[in-house]
Length: 233
Image (cartoon, rainbow, N blue to C red):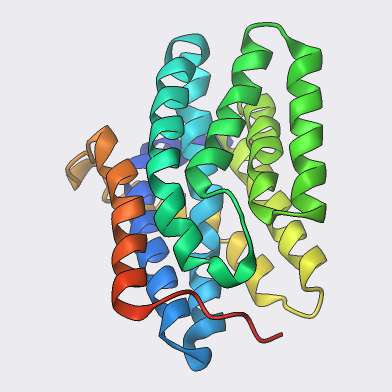
């Protein structure tokens, strides 16, 4: 039973990527519309980061040394391109790194571990987690990717449940009265499992497609609708 679940999770990566991209765009658009849509749009986007983190973990686990270099180059380059529209869109929240950079840091942690620079990997994961807690929540990604990578050898199912639980716990820590965001994070394994039913029928998204879509859709949202409004707790 567990082997079948693991196989379905891996088979659902492509479908999960499409689901996460669509929900990311809807979430960003909805949060910019106005106060009445802010939190519902925020909630529906909570599956995106765990899925993106897990997809990279799964791809790196197959060939960590060969693929980590390509990931670092792509994420670093597109992170630079994305930072201007992202910073303009999130201007009222102060300076924060966009997701391309935070995912790239996660790849760097895994690369260091795979190259047997284990103390460096542990330190980088710990430092980014600390900075994520005290400054920029996006910096939690590297340590969660690292945890998922370490568990992936045991099973993909264990890895995705670990990543989902860590994200859920973070949102509960930040907003202990909000149970919706953590609950939605826990739907990530089911999302990938269900995605396996249609992944094979999807056109594989070119590597540059996601990278380009990220800054373009944020830039368009900013130009058309203005900056992201501040959250009302």
